[in-house]
Length: 161
Image 1 (spheres, rainbow, N blue to C red):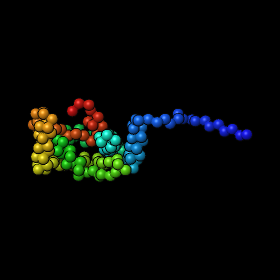
Image 2: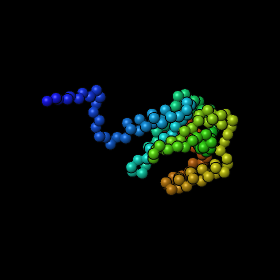
Image 3: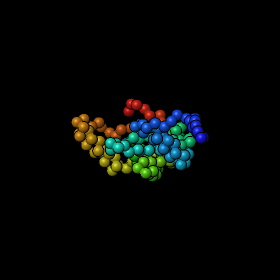
Image 4: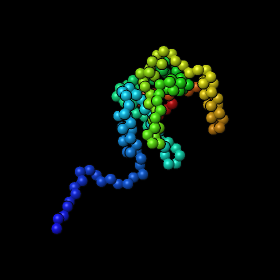
């Protein structure tokens, strides 16, 4: 009779309710598919109807994103500009139910340097949404539009607005 013995070099896989390891592996695969100097906004749908957002940068993207953010904040760009410039320089794709927005950071930098701003009509719409959101939540609407939201890790990973 022959007896076979199996030796595992790694820890055995065990069932887990934690989606993070799988999400991080998927993010690594998505990053590998994109051009250098790209910021990736990756949305994983959750079973409860919510979403988990993961940020990632391809080679050279993190320092370039921080540079874009520093310039945008210095120039006084706001969330309306962030939305407008982002729309101009992003590509949307999906991987199954995962939504991927890829922002070409060189193009974003060029728009910031060239003074591209959100059209006034879009700004007015954003102001109306902010007033409505404040009303729904019982808060007082603040004047203006929030600051530039960010495309680099330093600004996006801050814990305070």
